[in-house]
Each structure stands twice: as C-alpha cells, then as structure tokens.
Figure 1: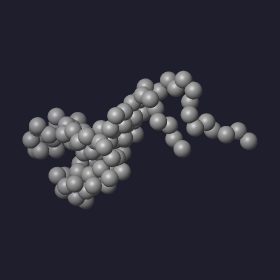
Figure 2: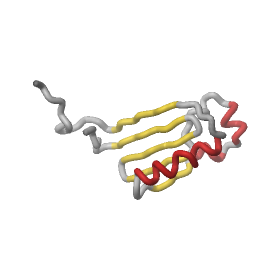
Figure 3: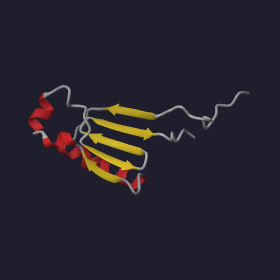
Length: 101
C-alpha cells in the first residue's frame, strides 16, 4: 500500500493560504469578538495586528463589493497567521511550510 508523505523533502512551497468566506448572524463589529477568544487560545504567542481597512468608515467598507471580504484584524506568530473579518477567516503559512498530519 502506498502511503502519502508527511513532509516534502526540499519543499518548494513558499506560502499556503486557506480562506473561508461566510455570512454571519452577528453584527459586523461583533464577529471579531466571537472568533478572537478561541483563536487567541489556540494560537498562543501571536501578535494582534489591526489592518489598514479599519481606517475606512464602516459605510464605505459595506458599500464597496471589493472590500466586504477583507480582513480587519490579523494574528501573526512567526510564519503563521490568521486574518479575521466580518465575512472571512484566512489561515496562512509562509515558508517553511508546516505540512499536515
């Protein structure tokens, strides 16, 4: 039986990104507060980075279809990151790629 490798020797992957888009029953400004406690607990030592989009008024962010899936906050820990927005959750891994179990 052929087994799948757990690691890639001389891995060419520079970055891996997984984006989840969703609709929420929570108000736009509450979504971050819903996700943050769980993500912070499971992503220890991360740095919270507000994103530049927060400098735009909420009405502008909601009216522009190019902005509705933008992350408002980012948790960064070395080469791994989690970005959170009212309609998006993004997991990212910069080189070295951590792989999968």
